[in-house]
Image 1 (cartoon, rainbow, N blue to C red):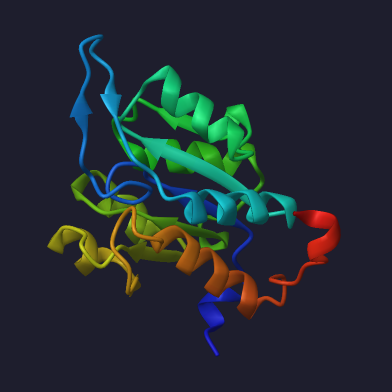
Image 2: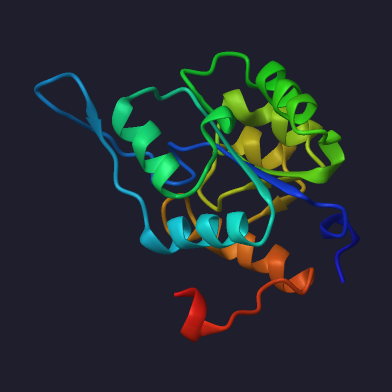
Length: 172
């Protein structure tokens, strides 16, 4: 039993260090190549299908990131890229979606995430997060960033709430 999961209706995530392992490869055009786990992406799509509101809050800001987030089913108005001051963005996300901060699970891994980890109803840090993020989090995932951390935590939430059920022949 985890009563902190009872009230969660929304999921907000950082990208670098959460959906990725934090590594970036600079490309000749100035973009950065990031690798994301397909199982994390599927968990986000499933959360959307099951009615959770999902948001991205990242300092990164490229068209490739925006496109990938939209492919995962995140609504354009809940994709916040180029973030500076994530707490204000988190508060705006909550207000726009009729949420209290206590209804949001936030996964973040580094210093810019600390205020949001503290404000969210459930703050989660990947296993390899910066120590300050771990100290601010309510829970530390057993998985590192980009290594199914997002899948593990979304699945844990949805199983607890009885929403991790599927008609495999129809859904996938």
